[in-house]
Image (cartoon, rainbow, N blue to C red; front, side, top):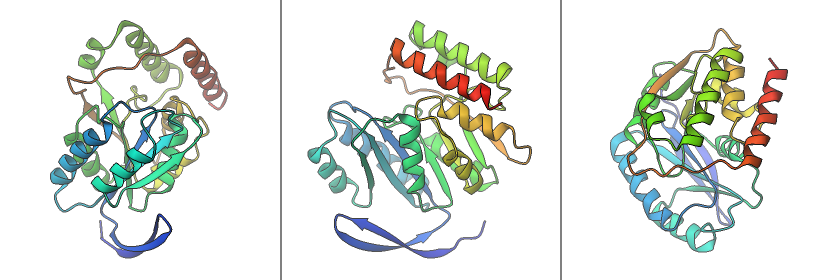
Length: 256
């Protein structure tokens, strides 16, 4: 892949800045909703680790606040800008859902590739380089796939939901990636345009995305094996959320 140098306009505060960008880098999009205490320090640690792993590959960090009501205010924003001066912060005041937040971050990307994962880097940082290398080698979409070890550490309710989701994705929707819900994916221009065309704002945007991609025979979809870091705490699903995502799933079926 050839590298191209171009000028990118960025607005930080009220002052415009111009940045020379090598297009062989990637944008890292992290959606954020009600993060835990001390998350800025944790993010700084993981991002520094990633930058060191990527060596000379530029990484643009984009954090998207999805209407958080705690732990994402002026104090946290100031701390983020101090720790990572070139960070792009998208501060949405209304909670719209993870899918909406990811699309908002991807829209602001300026490199050839975009990779998105969760704020706490649940799958570590080394795997992000693996995703990047597959994109460099020609993949349009790289999807993280969680194996049996992931299921073994899940709380029972989440395990059941995950198993049902995988069965539906593979056998009903016919997705090329069985584990469409893993919160790690990378895209090039083709994958990006498809992702931005999704409509679901909630968690099932991933299934909608891979469903659209699976219907295009010329699209190169690859996978990378991922496992969770041991210290990761899993969030629970409420009944209201499950009902909403069921409606989203029905909407995907209708578009089949």
